[in-house]
Image 1: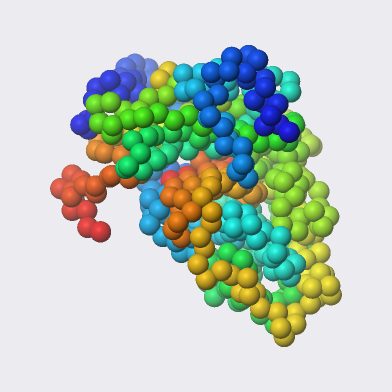
Image 2 (image 1 turned 120 degrees about the horizontal axis):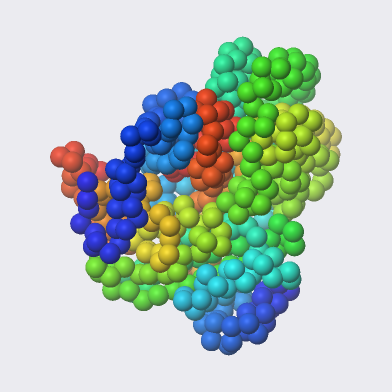
Length: 166
Length: 401
Protein backbone atom coordinates (compact mmCIF):
# COMPACT_ATOMS: atom_id res chain seq x y z
CA UNK A 1 0.00 0.00 0.00
CA UNK A 2 1.19 3.47 -0.84
CA UNK A 3 0.85 4.72 2.72
CA UNK A 4 3.44 2.27 4.06
CA UNK A 5 5.73 2.84 1.10
CA UNK A 6 5.69 6.57 1.68
CA UNK A 7 6.34 6.10 5.38
CA UNK A 8 9.32 3.91 4.70
CA UNK A 9 10.75 6.19 2.03
CA UNK A 10 10.43 9.23 4.27
CA UNK A 11 12.11 7.52 7.21
CA UNK A 12 14.95 6.39 4.97
CA UNK A 13 15.45 9.85 3.55
CA UNK A 14 14.83 12.17 6.49
CA UNK A 15 15.23 9.89 9.53
CA UNK A 16 12.51 8.69 11.94
CA UNK A 17 11.84 12.12 13.46
CA UNK A 18 10.19 13.38 10.26
CA UNK A 19 6.93 11.59 11.09
CA UNK A 20 5.57 12.93 14.33
CA UNK A 21 2.46 10.78 14.37
CA UNK A 22 0.21 8.90 12.03
CA UNK A 23 -3.49 8.23 11.68
CA UNK A 24 -3.53 4.85 9.95
CA UNK A 25 -7.04 3.69 10.85
CA UNK A 26 -8.94 6.35 9.00
CA UNK A 27 -10.53 5.84 5.61
CA UNK A 28 -7.86 8.13 4.25
CA UNK A 29 -4.77 7.49 6.41
CA UNK A 30 -2.71 10.58 7.18
CA UNK A 31 0.87 11.27 8.16
CA UNK A 32 1.69 14.11 10.50
CA UNK A 33 4.96 15.59 9.33
CA UNK A 34 7.47 17.69 11.25
CA UNK A 35 6.43 21.18 10.18
CA UNK A 36 9.93 22.46 9.27
CA UNK A 37 10.38 19.70 6.73
CA UNK A 38 7.06 19.86 4.89
CA UNK A 39 8.41 21.61 1.78
CA UNK A 40 11.32 19.15 1.49
CA UNK A 41 8.98 16.20 2.02
CA UNK A 42 6.63 17.43 -0.70
CA UNK A 43 9.49 17.98 -3.13
CA UNK A 44 10.85 14.52 -2.37
CA UNK A 45 7.45 12.85 -2.82
CA UNK A 46 6.78 14.79 -6.02
CA UNK A 47 10.00 13.72 -7.71
CA UNK A 48 10.50 10.21 -6.38
CA UNK A 49 9.68 7.66 -9.12
CA UNK A 50 7.80 5.40 -6.72
CA UNK A 51 5.47 8.01 -5.28
CA UNK A 52 5.25 10.67 -8.00
CA UNK A 53 2.75 12.92 -6.26
CA UNK A 54 2.57 15.55 -8.97
CA UNK A 55 -0.84 17.03 -8.22
CA UNK A 56 -1.92 19.02 -5.18
CA UNK A 57 -5.65 18.39 -4.88
CA UNK A 58 -6.39 20.54 -1.88
CA UNK A 59 -4.69 22.48 0.86
CA UNK A 60 -6.76 23.39 3.91
CA UNK A 61 -5.89 25.39 6.95
CA UNK A 62 -7.56 24.13 10.10
CA UNK A 63 -8.26 25.69 13.48
CA UNK A 64 -8.61 22.78 15.88
CA UNK A 65 -10.84 24.57 18.36
CA UNK A 66 -10.61 26.96 21.26
CA UNK A 67 -9.74 24.35 23.91
CA UNK A 68 -6.90 22.99 21.81
CA UNK A 69 -4.52 25.86 21.12
CA UNK A 70 -3.56 24.26 17.85
CA UNK A 71 -3.52 25.13 14.16
CA UNK A 72 -2.76 22.89 11.24
CA UNK A 73 -2.55 22.58 7.51
CA UNK A 74 -3.78 19.52 5.63
CA UNK A 75 -2.34 18.62 2.23
CA UNK A 76 -4.16 16.29 -0.13
CA UNK A 77 -1.71 15.04 -2.72
CA UNK A 78 -2.57 12.93 -5.72
CA UNK A 79 -0.54 11.21 -8.36
CA UNK A 80 -1.89 11.34 -11.89
CA UNK A 81 0.51 8.73 -13.25
CA UNK A 82 0.35 6.24 -10.38
CA UNK A 83 -3.25 7.00 -9.44
CA UNK A 84 -2.93 7.11 -5.68
CA UNK A 85 -3.63 9.70 -3.01
CA UNK A 86 -2.00 10.75 0.23
CA UNK A 87 -2.85 13.03 3.13
CA UNK A 88 -0.13 14.95 4.94
CA UNK A 89 -0.69 17.17 7.94
CA UNK A 90 1.35 19.65 9.90
CA UNK A 91 0.25 21.06 13.24
CA UNK A 92 1.54 23.74 15.54
CA UNK A 93 0.55 25.08 18.92
CA UNK A 94 -0.37 28.72 19.04
CA UNK A 95 -1.89 31.07 21.59
CA UNK A 96 -4.10 32.94 19.05
CA UNK A 97 -2.18 36.19 19.47
CA UNK A 98 -2.26 38.42 16.39
CA UNK A 99 1.38 39.31 16.98
CA UNK A 100 2.36 35.68 16.79
CA UNK A 101 0.63 33.83 13.96
CA UNK A 102 1.10 30.09 13.44
CA UNK A 103 3.87 29.81 10.86
CA UNK A 104 4.61 27.04 8.40
CA UNK A 105 6.92 26.62 5.43
CA UNK A 106 5.28 27.42 2.12
CA UNK A 107 5.14 24.63 -0.46
CA UNK A 108 4.37 27.00 -3.33
CA UNK A 109 7.85 26.40 -4.75
CA UNK A 110 6.92 22.73 -5.14
CA UNK A 111 3.31 23.08 -6.24
CA UNK A 112 2.28 26.38 -7.74
CA UNK A 113 -1.31 25.40 -6.94
CA UNK A 114 -0.49 25.95 -3.28
CA UNK A 115 0.10 29.65 -3.86
CA UNK A 116 -3.55 30.67 -3.85
CA UNK A 117 -4.59 28.02 -1.37
CA UNK A 118 -1.99 29.31 1.10
CA UNK A 119 -3.16 32.86 0.53
CA UNK A 120 -6.65 31.67 1.36
CA UNK A 121 -5.47 29.96 4.55
CA UNK A 122 -3.67 33.16 5.54
CA UNK A 123 -6.74 35.21 4.76
CA UNK A 124 -9.27 33.03 6.55
CA UNK A 125 -7.31 31.51 9.43
CA UNK A 126 -4.26 33.71 9.88
CA UNK A 127 -1.76 31.00 9.12
CA UNK A 128 1.51 32.52 7.91
CA UNK A 129 3.61 30.80 5.28
CA UNK A 130 7.33 31.46 5.10
CA UNK A 131 8.97 31.92 1.68
CA UNK A 132 5.65 32.52 -0.03
CA UNK A 133 6.16 34.81 -3.06
CA UNK A 134 2.99 36.88 -2.66
CA UNK A 135 1.27 36.35 0.68
CA UNK A 136 -1.59 38.79 1.08
CA UNK A 137 -5.31 38.48 1.55
CA UNK A 138 -7.15 36.93 -1.36
CA UNK A 139 -10.90 36.80 -0.75
CA UNK A 140 -11.29 39.59 1.79
CA UNK A 141 -10.22 43.21 1.29
CA UNK A 142 -6.63 44.11 2.20
CA UNK A 143 -7.71 46.25 5.14
CA UNK A 144 -9.92 43.65 6.79
CA UNK A 145 -9.20 42.89 10.45
CA UNK A 146 -9.25 39.43 11.95
CA UNK A 147 -9.49 35.95 10.51
CA UNK A 148 -13.09 34.80 9.99
CA UNK A 149 -12.65 31.04 10.01
CA UNK A 150 -11.00 31.02 13.42
CA UNK A 151 -13.28 29.53 16.01
CA UNK A 152 -13.00 32.58 18.28
CA UNK A 153 -13.75 35.13 15.53
CA UNK A 154 -16.06 37.95 16.51
CA UNK A 155 -17.87 39.67 13.67
CA UNK A 156 -16.83 43.29 13.32
CA UNK A 157 -19.51 45.87 14.00
CA UNK A 158 -18.76 47.94 10.98
CA UNK A 159 -16.56 48.12 7.93
CA UNK A 160 -15.81 51.58 6.50
CA UNK A 161 -18.84 52.95 8.36
CA UNK A 162 -21.08 50.29 6.83
CA UNK A 163 -22.92 48.54 9.62
CA UNK A 164 -22.53 44.77 9.57
CA UNK A 165 -25.92 43.41 10.48
CA UNK A 166 -26.39 39.69 10.90
CA UNK B 1 -5.02 51.05 3.22
CA UNK B 2 -3.68 49.07 6.15
CA UNK B 3 -5.12 46.72 8.71
CA UNK B 4 -4.00 46.25 12.29
CA UNK B 5 -1.94 43.15 11.61
CA UNK B 6 1.71 43.25 12.61
CA UNK B 7 4.10 44.53 9.94
CA UNK B 8 6.13 41.35 9.80
CA UNK B 9 3.15 39.58 8.23
CA UNK B 10 2.47 42.27 5.63
CA UNK B 11 5.42 41.84 3.27
CA UNK B 12 3.23 40.47 0.51
CA UNK B 13 0.84 43.41 0.62
CA UNK B 14 3.67 45.95 0.71
CA UNK B 15 5.43 44.25 -2.21
CA UNK B 16 2.22 44.40 -4.23
CA UNK B 17 1.65 48.08 -3.43
CA UNK B 18 5.23 48.89 -4.40
CA UNK B 19 4.85 47.02 -7.66
CA UNK B 20 1.88 49.17 -8.64
CA UNK B 21 3.73 52.32 -7.54
CA UNK B 22 6.83 51.40 -9.53
CA UNK B 23 5.06 51.31 -12.89
CA UNK B 24 7.22 53.30 -15.31
CA UNK B 25 6.18 56.04 -17.72
CA UNK B 26 5.99 53.66 -20.72
CA UNK B 27 3.72 51.27 -18.87
CA UNK B 28 0.15 51.73 -17.82
CA UNK B 29 -2.00 50.09 -15.18
CA UNK B 30 -5.27 49.09 -16.76
CA UNK B 31 -8.18 47.92 -14.67
CA UNK B 32 -10.40 45.23 -16.20
CA UNK B 33 -13.58 44.45 -14.30
CA UNK B 34 -15.15 43.64 -11.85
CA UNK B 35 -18.18 44.76 -13.87
CA UNK B 36 -17.13 43.68 -17.31
CA UNK B 37 -18.91 41.08 -19.47
CA UNK B 38 -15.74 39.42 -20.66
CA UNK B 39 -14.61 38.57 -17.12
CA UNK B 40 -17.58 36.21 -16.72
CA UNK B 41 -18.72 37.59 -13.41
CA UNK B 42 -17.09 39.78 -10.85
CA UNK B 43 -13.46 39.09 -11.56
CA UNK B 44 -11.16 42.09 -11.43
CA UNK B 45 -7.87 42.03 -13.25
CA UNK B 46 -5.17 44.62 -12.87
CA UNK B 47 -3.08 44.67 -16.01
CA UNK B 48 0.31 46.24 -16.33
CA UNK B 49 0.44 47.03 -20.02
CA UNK B 50 2.93 48.41 -22.48
CA UNK B 51 0.80 49.66 -25.34
CA UNK B 52 -1.33 46.73 -26.43
CA UNK B 53 0.94 44.17 -24.77
CA UNK B 54 0.05 42.80 -21.34
CA UNK B 55 3.18 42.65 -19.20
CA UNK B 56 1.58 41.29 -16.08
CA UNK B 57 -1.85 40.27 -14.85
CA UNK B 58 -2.80 40.58 -11.19
CA UNK B 59 -6.19 38.96 -10.49
CA UNK B 60 -8.30 40.26 -7.61
CA UNK B 61 -11.06 37.97 -6.46
CA UNK B 62 -13.49 37.85 -3.57
CA UNK B 63 -16.25 40.11 -4.83
CA UNK B 64 -18.71 37.25 -4.59
CA UNK B 65 -17.43 35.79 -1.31
CA UNK B 66 -20.40 34.46 0.66
CA UNK B 67 -18.58 32.66 3.51
CA UNK B 68 -19.52 29.14 2.40
CA UNK B 69 -17.07 27.53 4.80
CA UNK B 70 -18.12 29.62 7.78
CA UNK B 71 -21.80 28.97 7.11
CA UNK B 72 -21.04 25.28 6.71
CA UNK B 73 -19.74 25.09 10.27
CA UNK B 74 -23.09 26.32 11.59
CA UNK B 75 -25.40 24.08 9.52
CA UNK B 76 -26.05 20.37 9.44
CA UNK B 77 -25.04 18.30 6.46
CA UNK B 78 -28.43 18.27 4.73
CA UNK B 79 -28.71 22.03 5.09
CA UNK B 80 -25.34 22.61 3.41
CA UNK B 81 -26.51 21.05 0.12
CA UNK B 82 -28.33 24.25 -1.02
CA UNK B 83 -25.12 26.18 -0.32
CA UNK B 84 -23.17 23.90 -2.62
CA UNK B 85 -25.74 24.76 -5.32
CA UNK B 86 -24.60 28.32 -5.10
CA UNK B 87 -20.90 27.57 -5.50
CA UNK B 88 -20.87 26.64 -9.15
CA UNK B 89 -24.34 27.85 -9.97
CA UNK B 90 -24.12 26.63 -13.56
CA UNK B 91 -23.57 23.03 -12.48
CA UNK B 92 -25.47 22.70 -9.22
CA UNK B 93 -26.29 19.03 -9.72
CA UNK B 94 -22.64 18.10 -10.00
CA UNK B 95 -21.82 19.97 -6.81
CA UNK B 96 -24.71 18.31 -4.99
CA UNK B 97 -23.48 14.97 -6.19
CA UNK B 98 -19.90 15.51 -5.06
CA UNK B 99 -20.94 16.76 -1.65
CA UNK B 100 -23.51 14.03 -1.07
CA UNK B 101 -21.04 11.37 -2.13
CA UNK B 102 -18.56 12.64 0.43
CA UNK B 103 -21.12 12.53 3.23
CA UNK B 104 -22.33 9.08 2.19
CA UNK B 105 -18.78 7.76 2.20
CA UNK B 106 -18.27 9.17 5.69
CA UNK B 107 -21.44 7.44 6.86
CA UNK B 108 -20.41 4.24 5.06
CA UNK B 109 -23.66 3.90 3.12
CA UNK B 110 -22.27 4.54 -0.35
CA UNK B 111 -22.76 0.91 -1.43
CA UNK B 112 -26.36 0.69 -0.26
CA UNK B 113 -27.73 3.36 -2.56
CA UNK B 114 -30.22 1.82 -5.01
CA UNK B 115 -29.06 1.62 -8.61
CA UNK B 116 -32.08 3.60 -9.81
CA UNK B 117 -31.08 6.49 -7.59
CA UNK B 118 -27.51 6.38 -8.90
CA UNK B 119 -28.65 6.33 -12.51
CA UNK B 120 -30.96 9.28 -11.95
CA UNK B 121 -28.08 11.14 -10.30
CA UNK B 122 -25.80 10.50 -13.24
CA UNK B 123 -28.57 11.44 -15.67
CA UNK B 124 -29.26 14.82 -14.10
CA UNK B 125 -25.53 15.49 -13.61
CA UNK B 126 -24.82 14.90 -17.28
CA UNK B 127 -27.76 17.10 -18.31
CA UNK B 128 -26.31 19.78 -16.11
CA UNK B 129 -22.86 19.24 -17.56
CA UNK B 130 -24.24 19.91 -21.05
CA UNK B 131 -25.98 23.05 -19.79
CA UNK B 132 -22.76 24.29 -18.21
CA UNK B 133 -20.69 23.61 -21.31
CA UNK B 134 -23.30 25.34 -23.47
CA UNK B 135 -22.85 28.47 -21.39
CA UNK B 136 -19.09 28.16 -21.67
CA UNK B 137 -19.27 27.83 -25.44
CA UNK B 138 -21.94 30.47 -25.99
CA UNK B 139 -20.28 33.12 -23.86
CA UNK B 140 -16.92 32.25 -25.33
CA UNK B 141 -18.33 33.02 -28.76
CA UNK B 142 -19.56 36.36 -27.54
CA UNK B 143 -16.13 37.17 -26.04
CA UNK B 144 -14.60 36.64 -29.44
CA UNK B 145 -17.32 38.61 -31.22
CA UNK B 146 -19.72 35.92 -32.47
CA UNK B 147 -23.20 36.73 -31.28
CA UNK B 148 -25.30 33.97 -32.87
CA UNK B 149 -23.84 30.93 -31.06
CA UNK B 150 -24.69 32.64 -27.78
CA UNK B 151 -28.37 32.75 -28.68
CA UNK B 152 -28.36 29.21 -30.02
CA UNK B 153 -26.65 27.83 -26.90
CA UNK B 154 -29.04 29.62 -24.58
CA UNK B 155 -32.01 28.39 -26.58
CA UNK B 156 -30.86 24.77 -26.21
CA UNK B 157 -29.83 25.21 -22.60
CA UNK B 158 -33.35 26.39 -21.85
CA UNK B 159 -34.68 22.93 -22.71
CA UNK B 160 -32.38 21.42 -20.09
CA UNK B 161 -33.36 24.06 -17.55
CA UNK B 162 -37.03 23.22 -18.13
CA UNK B 163 -36.41 19.52 -17.72
CA UNK B 164 -34.47 19.94 -14.51
CA UNK B 165 -37.10 22.35 -13.25
CA UNK B 166 -39.68 19.69 -13.91
CA UNK B 167 -37.70 17.19 -11.86
CA UNK B 168 -36.60 19.37 -8.94
CA UNK B 169 -38.82 22.43 -8.91
CA UNK B 170 -36.02 24.94 -9.41
CA UNK B 171 -34.46 26.30 -12.55
CA UNK B 172 -30.84 26.61 -11.54
CA UNK B 173 -30.35 25.84 -7.84
CA UNK B 174 -31.82 22.40 -7.48
CA UNK B 175 -31.09 20.87 -4.05
CA UNK B 176 -32.20 17.68 -5.77
CA UNK B 177 -29.62 15.10 -4.73
CA UNK B 178 -29.90 14.33 -1.04
CA UNK B 179 -27.76 12.36 1.37
CA UNK B 180 -28.88 8.76 0.87
CA UNK B 181 -31.20 9.39 -2.04
CA UNK B 182 -33.06 12.02 -3.98
CA UNK B 183 -35.62 14.71 -3.35
CA UNK B 184 -38.17 12.90 -5.55
CA UNK B 185 -38.15 10.28 -8.22
CA UNK B 186 -38.04 11.83 -11.70
CA UNK B 187 -41.53 12.74 -12.96
CA UNK B 188 -43.46 10.32 -15.15
CA UNK B 189 -42.45 10.88 -18.76
CA UNK B 190 -39.05 12.35 -17.91
CA UNK B 191 -37.20 9.55 -19.68
CA UNK B 192 -39.16 10.11 -22.89
CA UNK B 193 -38.43 13.77 -22.76
CA UNK B 194 -34.73 13.04 -22.34
CA UNK B 195 -34.85 10.88 -25.47
CA UNK B 196 -36.66 13.64 -27.33
CA UNK B 197 -34.08 16.14 -26.20
CA UNK B 198 -31.17 13.98 -27.33
CA UNK B 199 -32.76 13.51 -30.75
CA UNK B 200 -33.44 17.22 -31.02
CA UNK B 201 -30.02 18.26 -29.79
CA UNK B 202 -27.74 16.07 -31.90
CA UNK B 203 -28.33 17.97 -35.20
CA UNK B 204 -28.04 21.24 -33.29
CA UNK B 205 -24.50 20.31 -32.26
CA UNK B 206 -23.63 19.81 -35.90
CA UNK B 207 -24.96 23.26 -36.70
CA UNK B 208 -22.99 24.74 -33.83
CA UNK B 209 -19.81 23.08 -35.06
CA UNK B 210 -20.34 24.48 -38.52
CA UNK B 211 -21.03 27.92 -37.16
CA UNK B 212 -18.30 28.23 -34.55
CA UNK B 213 -15.87 25.33 -34.18
CA UNK B 214 -14.73 25.29 -37.79
CA UNK B 215 -15.22 28.99 -38.35
CA UNK B 216 -12.04 30.52 -39.75
CA UNK B 217 -12.44 33.78 -37.84
CA UNK B 218 -12.94 31.89 -34.59
CA UNK B 219 -9.92 29.69 -35.28
CA UNK B 220 -7.76 32.70 -36.05
CA UNK B 221 -8.70 34.24 -32.74
CA UNK B 222 -8.21 31.13 -30.59
CA UNK B 223 -5.70 28.73 -32.18
CA UNK B 224 -2.18 29.04 -30.75
CA UNK B 225 -3.36 31.62 -28.21
CA UNK B 226 -2.74 31.16 -24.50
CA UNK B 227 -0.85 27.90 -24.72
CA UNK B 228 -0.81 26.05 -21.40
CA UNK B 229 1.88 23.36 -21.35
CA UNK B 230 0.94 20.14 -19.58
CA UNK B 231 3.58 20.32 -16.84
CA UNK B 232 2.47 23.85 -15.93
CA UNK B 233 -1.17 22.75 -15.90
CA UNK B 234 -0.45 19.91 -13.48
CA UNK B 235 1.76 22.03 -11.25
CA UNK B 236 -0.94 24.69 -10.97
CA UNK B 237 -3.56 22.11 -10.10
CA UNK B 238 -5.63 22.67 -13.23
CA UNK B 239 -8.26 20.06 -13.84
CA UNK B 240 -11.18 19.27 -16.09
CA UNK B 241 -11.21 20.63 -19.65
CA UNK B 242 -8.16 22.78 -18.82
CA UNK B 243 -6.03 19.73 -18.10
CA UNK B 244 -7.52 17.66 -20.90
CA UNK B 245 -7.08 20.60 -23.25
CA UNK B 246 -3.36 20.30 -22.54
CA UNK B 247 -3.44 16.80 -23.90
CA UNK B 248 -3.84 14.58 -20.84
CA UNK B 249 -6.55 11.94 -20.83
CA UNK B 250 -7.52 12.31 -17.20
CA UNK B 251 -11.09 12.31 -16.01
CA UNK B 252 -12.10 11.51 -12.43
CA UNK B 253 -15.22 9.79 -13.69
CA UNK B 254 -12.88 7.18 -15.13
CA UNK B 255 -10.03 7.45 -12.60
CA UNK B 256 -12.11 7.11 -9.43
CA UNK B 257 -14.93 5.12 -11.06
CA UNK B 258 -17.49 6.57 -8.69
CA UNK B 259 -21.26 6.15 -8.85
CA UNK B 260 -22.34 4.07 -11.87
CA UNK B 261 -19.81 5.51 -14.30
CA UNK B 262 -17.92 2.17 -14.56
CA UNK B 263 -21.08 0.61 -16.05
CA UNK B 264 -21.40 3.33 -18.67
CA UNK B 265 -19.48 3.53 -21.90
CA UNK B 266 -18.03 6.88 -22.85
CA UNK B 267 -14.76 8.26 -24.09
CA UNK B 268 -12.69 10.80 -22.21
CA UNK B 269 -12.25 13.85 -24.42
CA UNK B 270 -8.78 15.33 -24.69
CA UNK B 271 -6.95 17.68 -27.00
CA UNK B 272 -5.85 16.15 -30.26
CA UNK B 273 -4.80 19.45 -31.91
CA UNK B 274 -6.75 19.11 -35.16
CA UNK B 275 -6.35 22.88 -35.25
CA UNK B 276 -3.73 24.96 -33.48
CA UNK B 277 -1.45 23.33 -30.94
CA UNK B 278 -2.11 21.34 -27.79
CA UNK B 279 -3.00 23.47 -24.78
CA UNK B 280 -4.28 26.50 -26.67
CA UNK B 281 -7.70 28.14 -26.38
CA UNK B 282 -9.18 26.33 -29.36
CA UNK B 283 -8.28 22.92 -27.96
CA UNK B 284 -9.79 23.72 -24.57
CA UNK B 285 -12.94 24.79 -26.38
CA UNK B 286 -12.96 21.65 -28.50
CA UNK B 287 -12.68 19.41 -25.42
CA UNK B 288 -15.95 20.92 -24.19
CA UNK B 289 -17.64 20.27 -27.53
CA UNK B 290 -16.57 16.63 -27.48
CA UNK B 291 -17.63 16.31 -23.85
CA UNK B 292 -21.14 17.43 -24.73
CA UNK B 293 -21.32 14.67 -27.32
CA UNK B 294 -20.05 12.13 -24.80
CA UNK B 295 -22.57 13.34 -22.23
CA UNK B 296 -25.35 12.75 -24.75
CA UNK B 297 -24.18 9.15 -25.00
CA UNK B 298 -24.24 8.80 -21.22
CA UNK B 299 -27.77 10.22 -21.10
CA UNK B 300 -28.96 7.72 -23.69
CA UNK B 301 -27.52 4.84 -21.69
CA UNK B 302 -29.00 6.10 -18.42
CA UNK B 303 -32.44 6.47 -19.99
CA UNK B 304 -32.12 2.96 -21.37
CA UNK B 305 -31.36 1.58 -17.92
CA UNK B 306 -34.06 3.65 -16.23
CA UNK B 307 -36.76 2.35 -18.54
CA UNK B 308 -35.66 -1.30 -18.56
CA UNK B 309 -33.49 -2.72 -15.78
CA UNK B 310 -34.20 -0.17 -13.10
CA UNK B 311 -37.75 0.68 -14.01
CA UNK B 312 -40.01 2.86 -11.95
CA UNK B 313 -42.00 0.79 -9.44
CA UNK B 314 -44.71 1.76 -6.99
CA UNK B 315 -42.65 0.69 -3.97
CA UNK B 316 -39.59 2.67 -4.98
CA UNK B 317 -38.91 5.44 -2.53
CA UNK B 318 -35.89 7.60 -3.32
CA UNK B 319 -35.85 8.89 0.27
CA UNK B 320 -35.93 5.46 1.91
CA UNK B 321 -32.27 5.59 2.86
CA UNK B 322 -32.10 9.27 3.77
CA UNK B 323 -30.95 9.38 7.38
CA UNK B 324 -33.06 11.50 9.74
CA UNK B 325 -29.94 12.88 11.31
CA UNK B 326 -26.53 12.72 9.70
CA UNK B 327 -23.90 12.12 12.35
CA UNK B 328 -20.71 10.67 10.88
CA UNK B 329 -18.04 9.12 13.08
CA UNK B 330 -15.11 11.33 14.04
CA UNK B 331 -12.92 11.45 10.94
CA UNK B 332 -11.44 13.60 8.19
CA UNK B 333 -12.50 12.91 4.68
CA UNK B 334 -11.68 14.41 1.31
CA UNK B 335 -14.05 13.61 -1.52
CA UNK B 336 -13.40 14.59 -5.13
CA UNK B 337 -15.55 14.35 -8.21
CA UNK B 338 -15.58 15.58 -11.78
CA UNK B 339 -17.54 18.78 -12.26
CA UNK B 340 -17.88 20.39 -15.73
CA UNK B 341 -15.07 22.76 -14.73
CA UNK B 342 -12.77 20.15 -13.20
CA UNK B 343 -12.06 18.48 -9.90
CA UNK B 344 -14.46 19.65 -7.23
CA UNK B 345 -13.47 18.54 -3.75
CA UNK B 346 -14.88 18.75 -0.27
CA UNK B 347 -12.75 18.27 2.79
CA UNK B 348 -14.75 17.46 5.93
CA UNK B 349 -13.66 17.19 9.52
CA UNK B 350 -16.37 15.50 11.58
CA UNK B 351 -16.06 15.46 15.35
CA UNK B 352 -18.33 12.44 15.81
CA UNK B 353 -20.73 14.15 18.19
CA UNK B 354 -22.68 16.68 16.22
CA UNK B 355 -24.55 16.68 12.93
CA UNK B 356 -22.56 19.70 11.80
CA UNK B 357 -19.12 19.50 10.28
CA UNK B 358 -16.32 20.85 12.46
CA UNK B 359 -14.61 22.22 9.38
CA UNK B 360 -15.57 22.09 5.76
CA UNK B 361 -13.32 23.24 2.98
CA UNK B 362 -14.29 23.23 -0.64
CA UNK B 363 -11.82 23.06 -3.46
CA UNK B 364 -13.35 24.78 -6.45
CA UNK B 365 -11.93 23.81 -9.82
CA UNK B 366 -12.33 27.37 -11.12
CA UNK B 367 -10.20 28.64 -8.23
CA UNK B 368 -7.20 26.58 -9.32
CA UNK B 369 -7.87 27.05 -13.03
CA UNK B 370 -7.91 30.81 -12.59
CA UNK B 371 -4.63 30.83 -10.67
CA UNK B 372 -2.77 29.85 -13.83
CA UNK B 373 -3.99 32.96 -15.70
CA UNK B 374 -1.04 35.24 -14.78
CA UNK B 375 1.33 32.52 -15.98
CA UNK B 376 -0.18 31.97 -19.44
CA UNK B 377 -1.02 35.58 -20.24
CA UNK B 378 2.42 37.14 -20.11
CA UNK B 379 3.20 39.25 -23.19
CA UNK B 380 -0.10 38.66 -24.96
CA UNK B 381 -2.33 41.26 -26.58
CA UNK B 382 -5.20 42.63 -24.51
CA UNK B 383 -7.71 41.19 -26.99
CA UNK B 384 -6.07 37.78 -26.64
CA UNK B 385 -6.30 38.07 -22.87
CA UNK B 386 -10.07 38.21 -23.23
CA UNK B 387 -9.93 35.06 -25.36
CA UNK B 388 -7.82 33.35 -22.69
CA UNK B 389 -10.15 34.26 -19.82
CA UNK B 390 -13.10 32.94 -21.80
CA UNK B 391 -11.36 29.66 -22.48
CA UNK B 392 -10.75 29.06 -18.75
CA UNK B 393 -14.52 28.88 -18.21
CA UNK B 394 -14.54 30.16 -14.65
CA UNK B 395 -17.58 30.68 -12.49
CA UNK B 396 -16.94 33.33 -9.90
CA UNK B 397 -19.42 31.81 -7.49
CA UNK B 398 -16.99 28.97 -7.13
CA UNK B 399 -13.79 30.99 -7.15
CA UNK B 400 -15.01 33.13 -4.26
CA UNK B 401 -17.37 30.68 -2.56
